[in-house]
Image 1 (cartoon, rainbow, N blue to C red):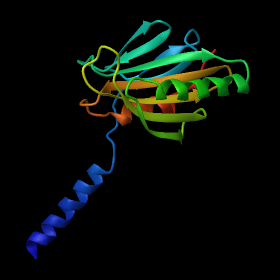
Image 2: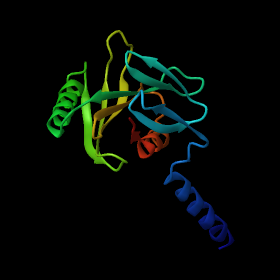
Image 3: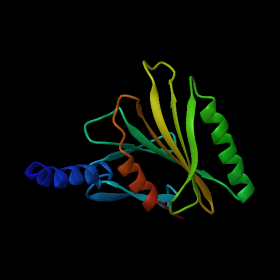
Length: 168
């Protein structure tokens, strides 16, 4: 009976921990009117620019990246064409398996894709969560990519998406 009295609270605490994501901690704002967006990312992440995209890097790791790209659009029809093209491109990646496509709760209308694929010249499978956010003047691609063996960090991506705003 005494063991049950001790074990029950421990089990409840374990279940509570497994059911929640940890907060990523202190954040920094990235982006601005030149990029067309702003959002919050962990303070210890770094950013760079490559071919028109903002590339985010977690500390001490080059295996995972989050790329953010803004595509200017001038109508809802143009935005829909970008979304349709994204679906085609993702399904056309080498060895791609799109396991989920769903609407997500975000500051802008958003659709998320989860997939695995093998990049050209890569050794092994990669996983990607690709979120497409539709603003008034842009469609934004938030592309979280890592080797399949790298642990997922949905909390950071979810924080970024929740804080995402169109600028300029």
